[in-house]
Length: 209
Image (cartoon, rainbow, N blue to C red):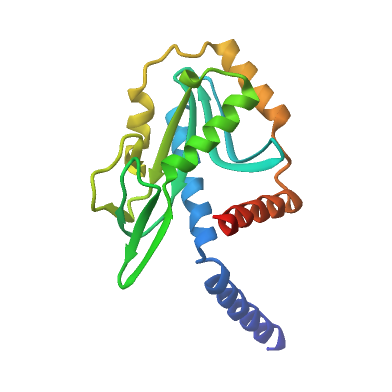
């Protein structure tokens, strides 16, 4: 009886913890990123490719976090994933976009601009021409654009189709391997200390704006 009571208390505790921490924006973001990673791996399972998820790169003293970097014969896809529910308003050149959910409204950085910075960091780190890198922003189907969807912004259900819409042959097999191992060699360890440094850097940027 005592053992059963302990099990019940433990179950209640786990439910409370999950409700408190498992439904946060960060948790939703990780869930969407896991879906994107799975779609990529399933789509390209018969092809040669390399994939980095939640990548940390240091450049000029700053730490940059990139959701996904896919290296395949179609090029190097630099992918930013957004898991937002509600309406999205934004244009390709707008500095900020707007997210509306019920009575709540807030602005967030244009993810195309965000991804542009990611590409510049990768381009410098890998010493590659810009033409080899492809920017892609993926929204989950929970979002609904109320303005025209900008180029290189897609819903997650179109990810596989989008990957295959790019021409093959931009990178040869040996180039895919070389870029993968070079990036693997310069990426930072994804540990608590480095993630703290990245968050501090992001906060400093926001504070100085």
